[in-house]
Every structure is written in C-alpha cells, then in structure tokens.
Amino acid sequence: MKIITGGVTAPIGFRAAGMYCGIKKKKLLDLALLVSDQEGPIAGLFTTNQVVAAPVVLDRLHLKKGIGRALLVNSGNANACTGPEGMRSAKEMAHLLATALDCAPHTIFIGSTGVIGQPLPIDCIKRALPTLLARVTRRGGGEAAQAIMTTDLKPKQVAVRARLGGRMVTVGGMAKGSGMIHPNMATMLAYLTTDAAIGRPALQAALAQAIDQSFNCITVDGDTSTNDTVLCLANGMAGNQPLKPGSADFRRFCAMLETVCRTLALKICWDGEGVTKVVRVEVRRARSAQSAKQIVQTIATSNLVKTALFGGDANWGRVMAALGRAGVPIDPTRVSLQFGDVPMVRNGQGLGRFAERKLTKVFQAKEFTILVDLAQGKAGAHMWTTDLSYEYVRINASYRS
Image (cartoon, rainbow, N blue to C red):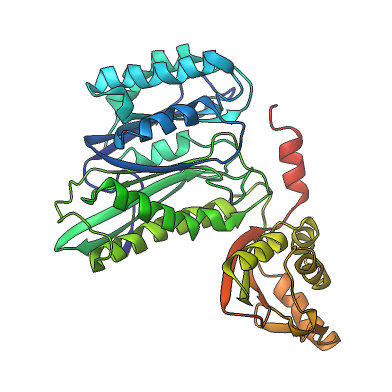
C-alpha cells in the first residue's frame, strides 16, 4: 500500500469541483460536487443524534437503494431544524443534479454543514449548479475538500493505492470537521471513493470496520452534530475481480480503507478548534472490550484531563480520577499508568517526584500516548483526544458571527 497525492478524485473515474455560490458571508468556497463516471455501490453511516438534518434524512432513504452516482455538499448552512422547507430544499438539490446527470434521484447524495436553524438559500445553489457541473475535473478534489470546510483551518484529503487481484486499486477521501467531534457516528462529514469492484454488502462491512478504528476513536469536545455523515462510493473502474469477504484481497482493501479513514480522523484532531496537542489514550488488559471503551472514552473526554494537556500540567491524578468514575469495576491496586515512555503509576501508587520531573517533559510534547494497564483481562481500546484551550472557547463563543 502506498499513500499518494490526491483525495476523492485519485481513483479512476471520479471528478470534482468546488465554488462560492453565496451561502457563506465571506466569499469562500461553499459548494462542492463529486461525480463518478459510472454509478456503483455506496455504503454509509450517519449521526446517532436524535436531531437530524434534512440531508441526512434524505441520504438514509437513498442509501436503501444502495447505488450512488454523485454527491452535492454545501457548507455555511446545516439545513437542520428547518422543517418541511428544509426537506424540500434537499430533495430539490438531488433532483436538479439527477436531471443534469441523467440519472435517478436516489443515486444523488446531499450533504450540508454549518449553522443550524437557518433556511437553506436554495436559490444560490440552483444558480451555481450549471457552473459547478462545468467545472468538474480529475484535478478538482482539492477544491471540493475546501468547499466543505466550516471552522476548519485547512482542507483534509488523502489517497492510497495498492495492487489487488493484479490490478491497481485506489481509495481516496476528504473530510471536514474541527468542532462537535465525538465518537458517536460519524462525528463529521467524510466522503470516500474507490475504483475497486466490490459488492455493496462487502463495502458496507469494510466501511463499518474502518470507521470503528478511526472516526469512532477521536474526540475533540464531546459533541456530535445533526449532520454527521460518512459515505463511500465504489465504481468498479479499476477492473479487478470483485472483492469477496474473507479473501486476502478483501482484507487488503479493508486495510486501505482504514488507512484513509484513520489519516482523515487524525487530520480532524490536529485541525480541532484551538487544538495544540493530540494524545492517544490506550487501555490494556480490561475485562471486556466494552469496559475498555467506556474507560478510554471517560478519560479522553475529561475536561480536567484535556485542560491539563493544554497547560502542560503533569497532573496524572486527573487520569486516575477519570478512570475511577468511568462506571467500570476495577481494582485500583492493580492499575499502572504510563505517559509516553515514562511509567508514572504502578499498582495504584505514584512513582515519586523523579518520575514527575520526567513526566513534565512528556506533557510539553505535541503528541504522546497515555497508557492505562488494568491487569484484569485481555481486552483493550484506544482513542485520540485533544487538549482544550482558550482558543476553543473563543471560536465557539462567536461561531455564528
């Protein structure tokens, strides 16, 4: 497997573009289009938030057919909590694009991101669509990645390539997200493409597995959005033999998809609102996978832990306190903690001031691992978390303005 330049247009047969259509107050790109030269199976997962935006409702309906041809995504307006008018706008976007591409409306998927509760200015999108369609190219992936950004500081895209069944297969992706990031599916917008030949059930299984090890393992602020979406479209144009679950080529494809998802997930962490550090929290030797996940999530979302990370305060007691309130039975006298390469707690007791001096240097790093060993079983879990800074508060105190 090789990481290559490009994003969603790196696989064969995908074209994209982005442009300013008038949704954002500043003249920044706010409308993205991604088109496949031929339709193919599409897989997806969406937010579990009970307040759901119109595009998510529509995409869930379209996903039941399992075939995709194009994605149309706007930024600057979430089209959430907009009532029947919001749903009409989402459907109109799909129908307009389907007519232009001469395909069925259910093969069109819509995305929106931005401020909640404001009517979507559909007329801006209608006027811009002919120009956007004329602009799609194999080089337009970067433009599309910019057009889906909101508070993101930089576009996020990646692609990987490997030989499967004697043919070169590519997986590409783009994502947006820097706030409202938490592992409750899917925690941002992410769009993935591949020219692999693969059936829809196999693609859905591969995507779910990749997300579980990537997007579902990051947290910035503990919030999930009304619009969270991950979609993966395959067009089969690489010409490989269809990938079958259980085969070596399918496993390699899963690894490719996971690499793309994990890379995008970490880009989201590093571009998190006000983030200065990204820290991996890992729990080992828990009694069960569920208990390991519960503990790792409690530590990773602790505001006291996150503010200590920002301040460089080597206060390992905050990690122990979060561990103890996770709602999972543990034996504190068996717990060990390690920060980076510095052991700090053994059998539930701190290792003294000499270790704390070493720990201060670890906390000054931009990236390190917090390892929790429970010495109870064989299960484990991990999550990437970020620090919580003054800048996060500033950004979100004035998000709409």
